Length: 114
Figure 1 (cartoon, rainbow, N blue to C red):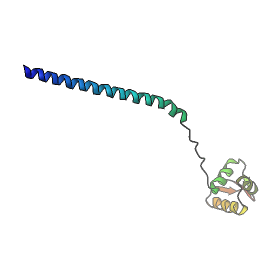
Figure 2: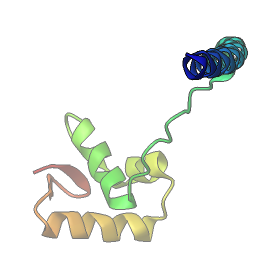
Figure 3: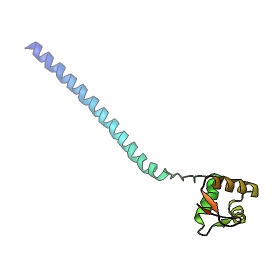
Figure 4: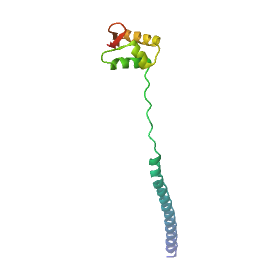
């Protein structure tokens, strides 16, 4: 009987310790929840949208795109104005594009898409 009383007292003591520990854990969790709740609106307000950088086309792709956009075709002088490239660069690009059968000449110095 005495042994049983000692065992019950030990169990009661252990239960008391466990309840104290669980109370401490609950308080810590409440603090964390409050801290996270306070941080969430700030994170949304600070969040920035990242602007996408435009894809830069090569000189040949730029010239080809300009030629494709023109309905009736385009001449070399207009290509020089629109692209800002030198005359020699435009000539080289036009030659390359015509050899690849992407453009064709329609009259002297007038280019259309193939």
